[in-house]
Image (cartoon, rainbow, N blue to C red; front, side, top):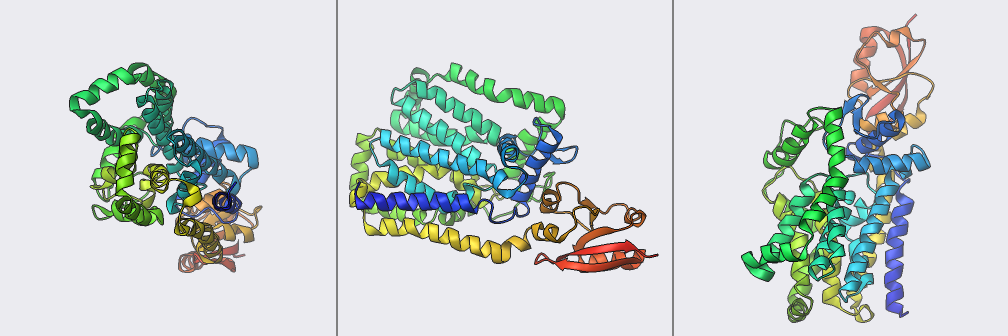
Length: 467
């Protein structure tokens, strides 16, 4: 093995290892990770593996259950902690890297270069291990897209694998996976075969009927059972989450939070920094190696244009949407690794700048971990407060209870709805901002002492009713 390849393996190993070690090194932060982590904890506590719950007895209709199943499985293995809920998502990221490395090799390019590029994309490095829906969706779409291309080349069995990938996507984030795939493969097929030829190729080369039945057999039973268990789910999820969420900025129908309202076209800016450093490298390489690119496109049966359509599909879908997040570019990121592997060729002769770009990411991951632990984590999570709290004393939030408060109290910390409830107890704890708690203490003549104040500006009080 050449020195260059050892260098690349070292970078790849460092990224995976640093991210793995970091999974339990910082708290679940509000709102996304703490919310999804709490839903997984609720799933294991209540034994309800059918419908994710927003709170006890409150169904979560916003997403299908795959991400919750993943984190809940981690809790079953490792207990209620950050590592447990993040580890399955890290494994999903590793699975995407392996899948794309295999795809690159089968197409005649370096799987190692593809892996290094993908693993060191900023949004991928962060999301591989984050408690979100996006990595499961990315794995499903990657399986669907690679299965489609290999089936198009004549490997019909891969067509069925592609439909399995769509089923995974349906259970990860819903029909969005079909929309993303259609935006990629339909224009590409038309580019390769023309409008009429594209439909002919679809029917001749792909197991459309049997593959669709396979996909539906895997995914539809959960949708049917979920609607039976909580009527109204399909209307909210299909109409609300798949139309109103993306077409209506600041959508007010969101039951579980506040919709985002970004200027139209912001998804392209998100892509620029989310896919860094390779979002800057790729356009330059495409221009400098345009002759190589043209030859490769002819020799590899439209592979580069296929990957380009794949990468662009999330950007095209969300261009006219204001309700977006940077992670929405993630499903198209796996294509970047193979594209750069095509442009660079033999990894033994890759320029030094390539390894320099890749080597920056492990350093940035360590730096980000330090920043989170020093400042950000305690501002956006109540874990530090519950480290100071007495788990045997009833705890109440004055004001809104964050999801991190639910997770780290294992559901025991309650919102203070009935102001007389603490007065019946010999002692209790209050958590809240000082102004809110001071108002309550004065109104109820409580005897409270500040035990700890976090960087979130919420404080822990130990209290007794005044005698």
